[in-house]
Image 1: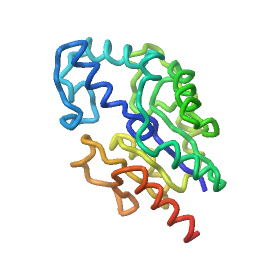
Image 2: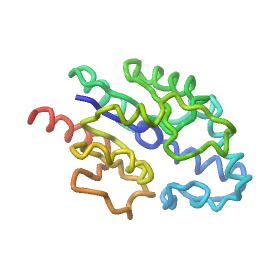
Image 3: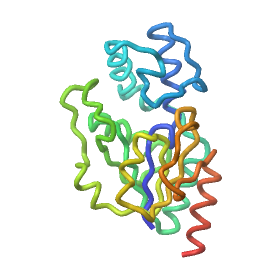
Image 4: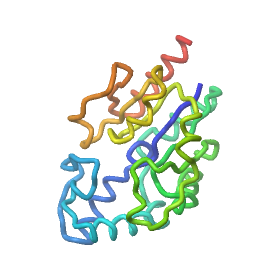
Length: 204
């Protein structure tokens, strides 16, 4: 069984850190629960210059390494690997963030997962000439049975896998979105996600 997992706001609490960072940098107080748009520039009402500054700082190694793990994430992922599943982290972070991201995974006992950087969101604007370790055409050659994702903007990357079961991690910016199909399921924590996957394992 092959499983796709997004990094930010699935494995770790990125947006909560961004909320604090924006307040520190620009004095804008936007609580996590009020982040209703996945586009952070809109959620925080930032200028283009402010957005680029925030994203550059947020992708510094020391910042990436400070993000807290989403409760039960590592234990759940490791339980799947122990059962023989292949787990791939497909992140929209640029490749310049790879080493710090890999270190974060290792620090959280996720040594066995594969990590790929895919240009999901066209974020070349804040780190000029960004590289990504996974090309779009190579991503589309990959097969997944389950996916854990929080961003409605990333759902388009699942259109080629009609049997894929997508577990949408409940976040403020996806609470009002319409899911593309019945194979999408809103999940409120990793325990719920783990139960759905294990139920599927039993059936298969």
